[in-house]
Length: 403
Image: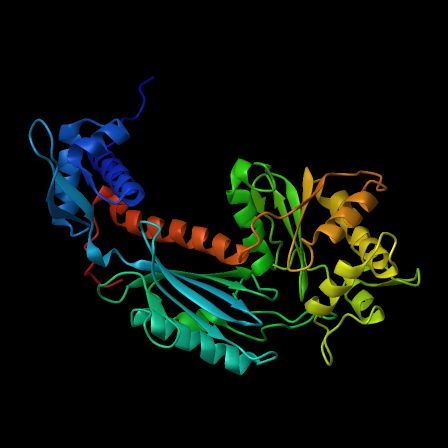
């Protein structure tokens, strides 16, 4: 029985993919260096590089290698390979970045929002942030990481501090949960600025992905199965199973604010209502007053009623998550979730559960949602660059042709 052999076009496209991936990882390389990194013969790599140069995907930098032997030309991606737009939307402001295929932030801006600004103000801030990025990131609070033309935005990844409809990317208001950002439709707002797809997910899922990507250096220590509790102004949970965040049918998995748990008086209440009973909500809002909560936790002694009530309430939700997801561990993040006193209380109380699992504080505390979104945006951008050599019959796509 004979086996089918790969076509010449397929072999060529695979070679071109290897060249592009090597250049994206290392910035600039000679053909000999690409051959050494990929294990593909130098003549085959040289032909692949020539085709990529002819297609306008790769350029000769004009630099030459030094040392003994024949000097080699350095190659890199074409300057118009584009960038990925990364956006983080929180109740406090909009952060936007342009990340190139080498993983470098080439433009960035941050626009502050007044508390409870509303969806209109958030939408205007998002539009302004993207305009600053498209203009090079110099306007307003923007900054530019290096000179050159404004980046071509090929893809976008958005993190938002509210539930996200998986099908549309629109933010969703759930009962008994604070609507921190509002009824925002990011894909529609970004459609005119971004050439390709716009991926939107909530901030908790992106934070969990950041912990997962940290590998052995992160709080999860390389675990593929964990629950990430995010305790901040809002409440959220991400379930990571077999290394993937499980978003659910509509993208609303992990929305824990409305789950029933034990309140301070021993009665069943929704988790979000616990903070009303404890006087830990912001005035006129269901959002948690993080500053006040952290102050109380910081002043609490062992057995303090507020700390015990918080531990009991979160433990009820944690027990349900463990029963349903069977995680290897629980990671606790968020502005007050990572506080040592609270983590210690939750760790102590979780030992009472029928199926106790280790409880650890999240390590990625500096905008973990932005870190997770940035990593996904880089992956999406690199895939879009490589897609040019994955056309039918393995032929290179003319990037100037209509899409």
